[in-house]
Amino acid sequence: MRETRPWQTIMSIGMGAIVAANIFLFMPLILYDGNVDEFTVSFLSILGVYLRPIIFLIAVFALIGSLLNKAAFPRYLFVLAMVSILLWIQGNLLVWEYGLLDGRSIDWSEGAWRGWVDLGIWLSGLALALFSNARAGKLVIRAAVAVFGLQVCLALLLSSQNTQAFTEKTKTVATFDALEEIYRFSSRRNVLQILADGFQSDIFEEIINDEGGDAFARALDGFVFFKENMGVFPLTHMSVPAILSGKIYRNHIPREEFLDEAIGGKTILNEAYRDGYEVDLAVPASLGHMYSKSHYTNMYLVPANMLVTKSDYSVNDAAKLIDLALFRMAPHFLKKYVYNDQIWLAQSMLSGKKYGGRRYFSHLAFLQEMRENMLIDREAPVYKYVHLMLSHNPMVTTANCEYAGKVLPTIRATVKNQARCSLGGIVLLLERMKELGIYDEATIVLMADHGAWVPPKGLKGQVGADGKIKATINPTVVAMALPLMAIKLPHASEPLKTSLAFSSITDTPATIALTMGLDAGFEGRSMFDLPVGKPRQRYHYSYQYSRSEWTANYLAPIQEFIVNGSVFDSAAWQVGNKYLPGGVVEKVRQQ
Image 1 (cartoon, rainbow, N blue to C red):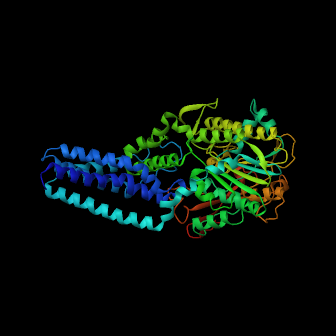
Image 2 (image 1 turned 90 degrees about the horizontal axis):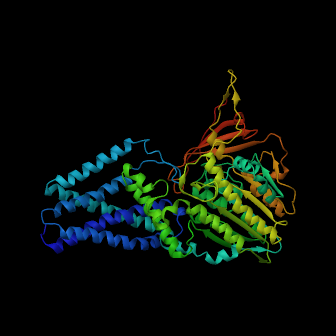
């Protein structure tokens, strides 16, 4: 090895570039490719944000290498090479499952053995780099270069397979002009469908019945609350196609193919569009790719923060992606510092300690801006579909609807606080519609896609021989099957009513179509035509979330539940078939 300062600098730059590429290029690229729907801008735009930290990191490595004496420099080079190899091993081989990273707490004590495995591998690798002889050290460098070459080949392959998303997705965020249209309502006829993600129906009922809840009830005059409404999936991904089309995914065809057919086919949005409605979508930026399969007039991607320029979208996505990359590449004992008590390391730097609540408060601010800028000046009938992450994890509000200063545990009290605050923002929007004279004639749907992870009140069970109630179904499964559903028909003005009809979320498109006079022939029935108390078989499909949900051809095995009766009666729940990836069905054994 040559013994000159310039040579040490060049070698440090080269090996530092390999380390930087692992952190800012290879792992982010793999994660981006596996989670395209989660990002608003192209990978190329994100890479532009990483350019400065990449240069800075390489410069630091080069400076350190140039200052070391000739005896210490080879060890430094060996360590850099080993770190690049360890990052690759941790990110690609030691991939532990930590569940859904959506703001929920992680019990780091569970599976602590992972940390000892990771620590053992890292300490062994670094010890080898520090104490090996020159020959072994050179082998480490060659291994690092070989792994780098393999990753370059993989990066080129991934880029060639998804060129548009990697280089052109910035076009999808050019929706700022659409924001002005989102504010504009029709002077003739309006349909407003608000999907409050994760708003649990029994919590809505409790809020309405609480002291002070009568103010909410008065604001919702004309609405019918469907207490027994049942969801079909515990997560947003497959709930949205069911809401729009009435179709249910059962692992029978590849996931993306189903989304293309369901969202791009016969949906309530597409039928309204064909019938002459101007369809406005305001949806979370992370779900823009999925909703873009639909027909629409305007689409605005609601950001997870109050920044709304294209460059801000890039910075936000870049921070999210680097957090995921660091989480993946960090040893178990360091992951919790990246996750940063549910508010993430890099992303929290954008908004300081208030980062944890920025999505909730940003989406609430969107409702406020929509209310303050509302105009009634469009001639064509308008269908507005608004999907907001308000009552969803993470829980960040106090009882006074202020930022709690941190992410709170997901328990009934915190979920209820945030749901009440969310409902307050929605109600103010509806009050503005009344002031402008378009509330009465409008069809308004206030709903959720699934529940909020907290066991519902009033869940009944079977009484055993000992006289005690036995739990026959996991209460959390029931909770996730309880999405809010409240609908106001045109010219309805009676006080808020509660219906006990056995409705399903798959009845949504048929119900809205009937109120609009569309002969669309959706599966399901109008909720207003369902006789109360009449037996009706409904279905819920539960599955475990995995990080591959948005990229794999199929979901994890889907467990079907059949409900004959009240969703709040655990005795009415029966285990149905299990739907395995690829269309394989495990039939339930008849008892």
